[in-house]
Length: 526
Image (cartoon, rainbow, N blue to C red; front, side, top):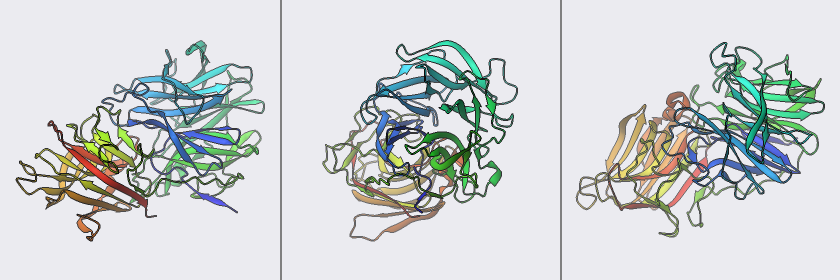
């Protein structure tokens, strides 16, 4: 029997939503304050995915300027109807105001439209449902019109939408408020029609350890909806905090062309205790139907790392190389910016075969767009390395490799200089950890080389840092077994996972300097 390994999208890929169009599957996830927004993937077998691009890849679609950590794009839903793909989502601003919008495309790998912003659409996690009679419905969550009976008590509501005019029409209807009062934070609704029933699948219990998936059904789209007496249909909160897969929730049901059913959901892997450096990842599990209710992973009722594969032709796509030589015309799709890029600060053309980062005044600790290009950490244990040519001309100028969770929690592995640059004084190679907004230098050595290679190896929560001038030399340890839990959401807060990136800053000063990165490599060690 063929099996597959969960998670199917490792690393920070939360809130999965997926559709099938013929024999093709498409999936999107949340992206929060990172740009481009909403990565979109394609699969033939539900297990192996290739990234097609990002839905929101233009500043006109997504302005993340000064967004605080874990705001931005939350919980997208992808749907398809009559040759048009729809992606609907929430933009959360710094005041926690929720702005819901959708975009469309004829080709999911092509250009998506600018946003259609929806008026009078409260709450988060919007979804679209196309009914058999041609009507289209919007679902989301909101504070109950009658008020909240307990903390985080939310209402799942439904309203017809006219996609041609981009307006909600008719009456807002409360259709469900979850399975139990302990199941607070009702959110992430998806509506399906399966047989004679309409189903609403939601997340409850918050995004932490008590996260869960529940379901209700009705013979009418408008209700009344009856909850499944077996709710929650999937959770790991009863398995304890030592179980290696936690905070399971936010599901999406999908039927294959052969009539088999599966569920996508988010969950996290822990390391070194209850610490989740990778954020929330995308998992897959089988579903069967009994008495017109879904049974998730029958006989087991939980997510597993090793699972029998779907009955679909295996299609394995080429994966990005371990080593990015920066010799393409554009950045690989694995790379992200922190917030919407401001200014012309990066280039693959100025020094062919290199990624050039021009120093910006913005720092990692600023709520801004620093000169940072980063990719997700996708393994509990990994190795990353980079090759940099950089000659700082002033004391404020730094560049190097960073491990990033948010502005107040990260590692910076940087080359810097004295007051007069390398020409005047000996520089330094420094490892700094920033924890809860406070910097601490973990290690520093004299360094005045213009060519530097960096390496970090993580074994669980032990992160060790190495350096050398070139590949003819052996790696020199700088600092061993730094505590990687600084990169965990359990230390740093928020909803995102850790990133590894290339960085250059003039730390508040003006500069015309740059750093050139000849290559970057990343590989899992699990």
